[in-house]
Length: 154
Image 1 (spheres, helix red, strand yellow):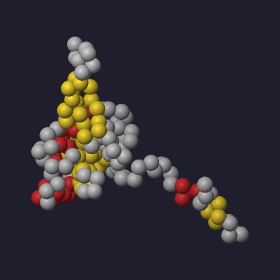
Image 2 (cartoon, helix red, strand yellow):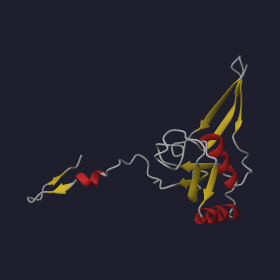
Image 3 (cartoon, one colour):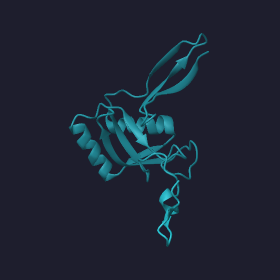
Image 4 (spheres, helix red, strand yellow):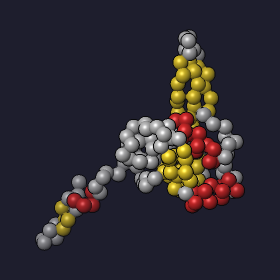
C-alpha cells in the first residue's frame, strides 16, 4: 500500500515555489517529482497549482497579468518556477473563503519576475506583498502631545 504525499521546497520568500508530489511505499521509500514541468507556460504552471493544490475550478488572468506574462515569456523568464502571493486566510484570493475551499475562481491580477530569487510571482486578488502586516498599522497609535512628546512608539 502506498501513501500519496505533497511536499514543498521552500525559500524565505515563497514557500510554494516548487511543489513536489508522489508516494511513499510501505518501506518508506519515496518517489517524488515536481508538480509541473518547468517547460510549461507560466499560465499553465499557475493553473496547475491553482487546480491541483488550491482547489480552484478556474483561473482568470486580468488583462494586465496576461500582458505581463507574455512579456516575461518573451524575455526568457517562462522557464522559472512560479510563486503565488495570496491572502493568509485561504488558498483562494477571497479571505472570506477560509481554509481550502473548492470550486472557486482564482483571480490573478499581476505577474512579475523576481530574477535574483529565480522565480515568477503572481499576485492574486487584493494581496499586498509585504508579509506580516497587522490589520491596523502601528502608525495609528502614534501621536504628539501639546507638549511635543511623542506617544505610541513601541
